[in-house]
Picture 1 (cartoon, rainbow, N blue to C red):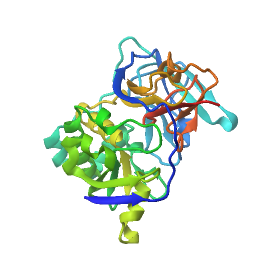
Picture 2 (tube, rainbow, N blue to C red; picture 1 turned 90 degrees about the vertical axis):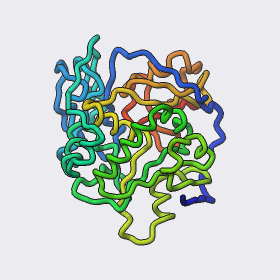
Picture 3 (cartoon, rainbow, N blue to C red; picture 1 turned 30 degrees about the horizontal axis):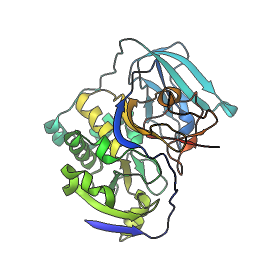
Picture 4 (spheres, rainbow, N blue to C red; picture 1 turned 180 degrees about the vertical axis):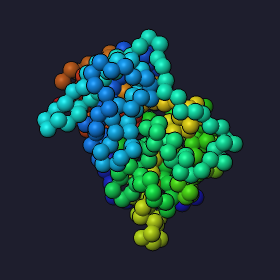
Length: 331
């Protein structure tokens, strides 16, 4: 196990740290994808207002990466496609049906995973819209399909306040996480390196043997690019891939069940939040639903994705898959 210490960095002294309690939120009436907040993505729409979609139906594909599609987080009717200046697609809203239908991609078990061809596995992840969860260093765009990385970095923690604790989102999902790690090894044909903050290493006892890097210090000591820079031995290691711990769970759930996952664990916290905590909610849920009854000051600034690395979000917006932090700061 390697220990990495970052002496420089940033530490925001913010109140509103979330408790480790996990609240399961009710199903929303609508969900959405927000292409405007997806980095390096230039969408080409596959649907129009009024179209019927299933959970997992293609909503748009990335013009910059042909074959990389983004899928609907719910089944129902496309009720709104909002475009901003220069035809930037801001969000695609789906009004959910009472009973949702799923696009089926076919489940695979552990035995089938061991025998599947690497390119076939990659094609399956691309077809299901899970491939963008994997990013490639140094530029952090979607992982190259035809490249073989030197390694895959899985970061369980995120020091950008506030993000879900691994002890919360991994609780009861250790077997699923192991399945996802094996899928990553098969897809990349490279070793998986798992990192966690030193203060949280003792909270994931079931996975301690898999952890390869423990780090100390302030933001951004958790960042895969920082860890790669501190541990690499040659320039040949620069093109590594990385993915979050929750991304591994989503990928594993998709492969094992054969349809798109619909939920993720996220945090609603910050100085402007009453009872900040972890919540289990639909992917693409409205921010207004996530914040209901928690934000006393309507003029609070909402940031989706983290204080350092996130983007401002309006109350009428939605959270994408992978945006696991919703922070409210006083203006």
